[in-house]
Length: 230
Ligand code: 1GP
Image: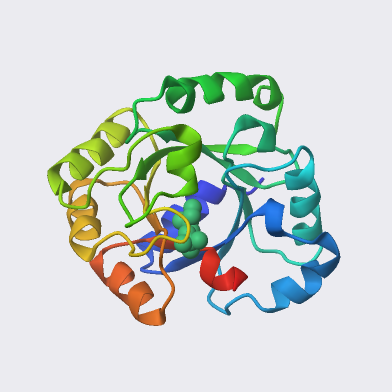
């Protein structure tokens, strides 16, 4: 059986740069899956599927439609436990550790167990860190938590390290979908220096220039959603 986390780690060790395109099931039309996926950037290595608020069963339909068209790994990036579906390859098992809302630190995780305990879905414990991207984002609204200001580099680094020390296998620095500006290069570089697990960066990355800067600063995987949707 494939181990998607091991594949990600190996690719990073080989110096590869990973690009995940985020698909929000809420905005996805299954009948247009082929057309949509044909337009994926050639560099795409992964597809993330998830959204802040998604109608019941819509994630499953979306994943099935995507998997019918591509062999790229499809990884769930769920806004809540109801979006978990066996049809994907793996699950980012997120804890929103920048926030202090128990619902997104542990409650959603407990609620997801019934779905996961007999599942073959690969579970990847992920430290999810929300950073200010210049405007209120959906994660902030839904979770009722505040992002960490970009000026608080030490807090961001310590939060990422607390995630690693708690056994998370990935760090995801999130500026929020549609952010005015992405996570700064300084933050990416400092977090990268401090942690030894793979680093994902997303939110507000639109141009090739921004992508290059994020990779150069130390991002192992970049997530792009809005730009691709547009
Ligand atoms: C959001 O990090 C992702 O969770 C992607 O953000 O939509 O701004 O690309 P964008």
